Amino acid sequence: MIKKLFYSLFLLISFICNAQIANIDVKYFTSTNDYNQNVISDEIVSLKIRDKGEKFIEVKKLIDKKTGKRSKKAGFPWAVQYDSITYFNLRYCKDYLSPENFVKADLIGQYLAIFLNKKSQKDITSVGNYYGGGLQGLLISESTKWGKSWNSENGNKSKILIVNTQNLDLSHVRGYKNAGWRLLTRKNINEILNLELTKAEIKLLSTEEISNLINSKNNNS
Image (cartoon, rainbow, N blue to C red; front, side, top):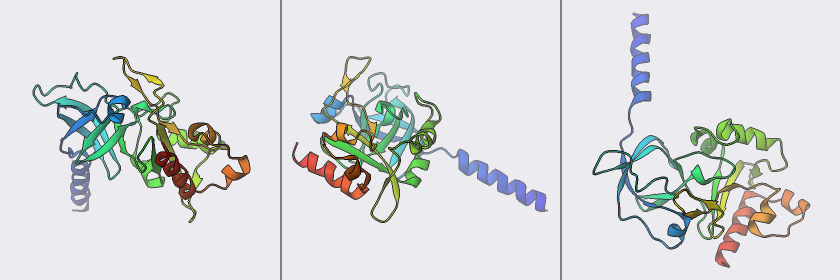
């Protein structure tokens, strides 16, 4: 009886784990330049989803609704828009490559920023990146550097991904120019945000203060 119960429980867990998440229809921004100019696709594609959370959509492939096959026109878009919310493709992250993992930004403007707390870091998994080990590997690697997690005023730790949408420094195979996301660290914050903070000032920065700095840059751009 107990064996049957455990077996039934195992089947139920397996069914839940393998349950397919329904596809969703989206439009997309082919490149950063299209995003900057608010040029969104005429085409609607269907996302075949691997996983989905409050902050992210992990996509297996983008499907042409007419053919039911992978959309050649969409290719690997810089961002997709679903239910009026834009999610950005971490394929275009220099420090953490996670192809077709689309994440919602917390701050919008010339500088887009994503704040990843511990839960978000666990939710957003990587199928591989240039440095190996996925996001968790990157986080472990970064934790040994001066650029480790940023602390909030109440002591919560976060990683911050940021992109300057005017800095089109990534070349696309189709000839597009894209801006690359970066992991914001104490080492590169002056460079990315064009600041002149001292090491002592940077060391004391909270995530709230960084958010204010980014918003200030966006308001003045």
